[in-house]
Length: 246
Image 1 (cartoon, helix red, strand yellow):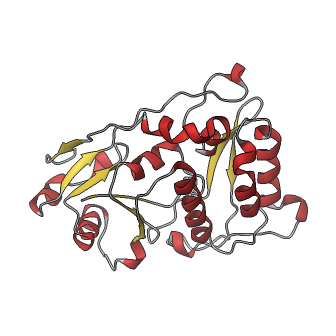
Image 2 (spheres, rainbow, N blue to C red):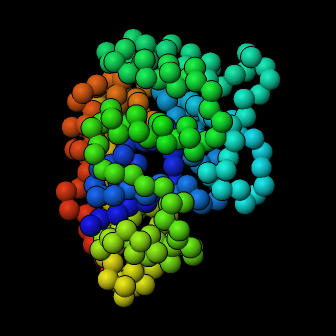
């Protein structure tokens, strides 16, 4: 069984969903430390002259606060309410896209409902994306597994808890710290994700194609074809390594 894991993302990009599609079980690492300026509470969308961040404001907490403990800061100024601003940005800049109306009701519900915790919002958004892209990979929260340790030891504990024989890792920062020898000695292979970002029609074509946006950019532009386009970037058999990452 292939297991993959990642921190929760508010608006996942295509590589995040590709990782989920390529494994048998996906673990949301909700009990890791929250990382500011990451994708746990923000991502970019394309507007008329650039890509802009859509950000969920959070209550300032302690430096070691876990993702699952982060609270959303609703603020006190109605004009600055983040949900109103986000929905207006999407409506104005994507309303003319061919498939915006297909997803509008689900998203309008997101941006009119009260959210208390970041994790609650992120999990809901992930479930919407699973439905929209037709992804059937089961999802489990790391906090329910009772695992301990850090980095490679933590990954190994997750694989043991779930009975996985292969761990699908991202090919970014994980390469620097993942001890593949440790996992190999325990009978767990490591496969590196190799995602090729697809190019698809986007609004504001004069800007050129902008990659790594929130996946809703693809949905609004391509609708039901989005799953096929996502799959086109997924390597059918991820490369497997046993050697220690350096």
